[in-house]
Image 1 (tube, helix red, strand yellow):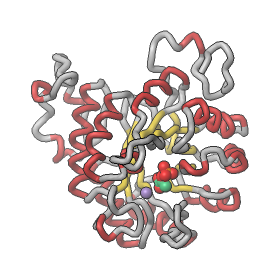
Image 2 (cartoon, rainbow, N blue to C red):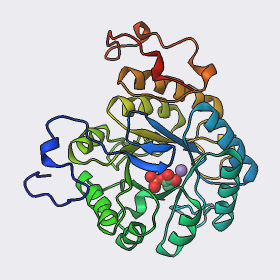
Image 3 (cartoon, rainbow, N blue to C red):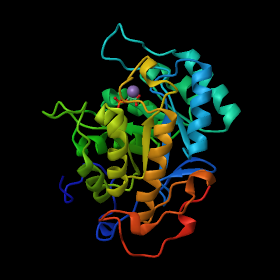
Length: 315
Ligand code: PEP
Ligand code: MN
């Protein structure tokens, strides 16, 4: 990417700001939630909405553990046409009911221009999946939808292409775009995709848009979610989007990568420690932050020898 010939304009960081980072402009989601400020924002929930009870249980748990957004797919992009395709409109209704009961805002995927109006009526954040990153008709429609958009990087897309996809949404009137690094296709087969940690740092040099990271789809394995989450926060991510399911082995999609409630709580606690070391915050439950984080217990490079700031993690 050359700074002298910017192909994206609205998504670009003004050139005079590149010298001193960061210059992320927070994106407002609701009156009480923005992404891209000092708080590392966590979105969590099942891959697919499979029913009311499982979504309500997931929402209650992830909210109690400190998540600010509930994720869950009603319309699912599946590689096989014979795999579970999501509950569709019924899933949206379930999501709305769960939000009403728990108060947690929701992020859900929109697959098609024909779905934009009805997803926008319910979702707090509209998700564009990796497979749709360059669906330009969909991006244009989302430019006019009035809701913030979580734009996931295509598995084979360059960072510049992700930024140009964001530009399509912004050029159509919507500047509330949040980017998401979710792993790219490489020769490696030990993981589902390869999480491009470098992309987080590159994006921070190129754009004012906030950057989320999806460690679940990147690794494709529940045991990788913790290390990838910590690495993402250390690299400067503004948040994470994590798959959590009440009973992962029984999940109708992405069973291998979804966390149990207990595993998710652990990820939240460790993530808060890394956030603190990076001068960021993650909201945790009061009960989870006792005893206070002891900086001397943090491994290099996180042992920064600065005084602990108790205000950094609050319920
Ligand atoms: C998802 O987040 O539900 C999803 C399908 O992810 P991706 O588009 O990154 O594959
Ligand atoms: Mn999934």
